[in-house]
Image (tube, rainbow, N blue to C red; front, side, top):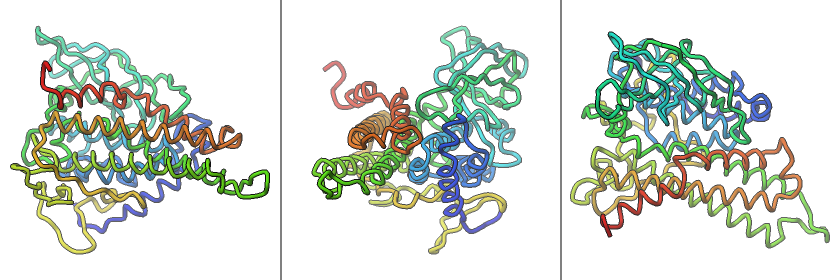
Length: 442
């Protein structure tokens, strides 16, 4: 590994530009353009959560949120695949070390897809590992993946079945092209099939590891964070970008138009109120998601962004804990350098105009359940705000806004597809949060 200057500003910008260029083509074909897929890797998405021992970044959630939201203003399908590309690397980091070596021994820029919720298929215990068969739906990004994470119930123990996750080379599974949706059309969220594929023990782990986070105190903060704390946040990130893109498209549609008396349409009070309310709702959603990301970046087992006795965590008030300090000595200087491979990208920067919000330091430590409930609440509320704002833009965008091929109607379809995800439903989020507020049995 070599110390290099960070070029990620250029590569992240290139990804956003490539996504914008190919967004309409991606809608028509139902798949991302090869240039966009290559740009995702070059921008450091695949290595963002890969452990540093393999040349990865072991990065933070706030920077990923900003980058994904920036990409989403151009193409929500690209943003969806980008955030999952990073997220699946974080999931794979829960494999045993030898299993991680199989994935990242040659490069941290390995693309990983996943279909782990709900578990499906059949597992059979065999010497040295497992044989897995069946089919798994909604494996976003599988068309351009190198590996696939699958989940199945393990009945070999005789008691309650274990929820086991298995890493399988992409060439060992089949893909049925079943994804034909009204939104997020280019995510390639197809069905994966397997027929007696052997998976060695080193390439598997059980769900409890995800629920608890990696227990190793030397692991990076992003790997010690429980899955429940960040799942909804990561699924919500593309929605923030889609809504911003919708507002940009609406502004371009409305700006040149005129009222019947010749005055600019922008002088209409309804238009002005729509602009003010929708932009404010998007800002509110951004603050909710950035607070959730800061909570995740500042989290350690049993704590959120606070230290014991209500004191700030080691990052200090107004600063998330620096992930680099958890794995190595801090570096100083205005131009921070990072340890990475000479031929690979540096960590993702926050996208322009989407700088992370400093975490709000609470008055008492948060339990993992409380922090997860807060993040689930905030992600669901943020997506609800964003969806409502885009709905309002569509109602005032006129006939031009609903024409196929326009950025507004595409963002409208995409954000509804995102809001339909199970992790972002308001009901379960409200129930989880209420359980932290009301005493048990009250």
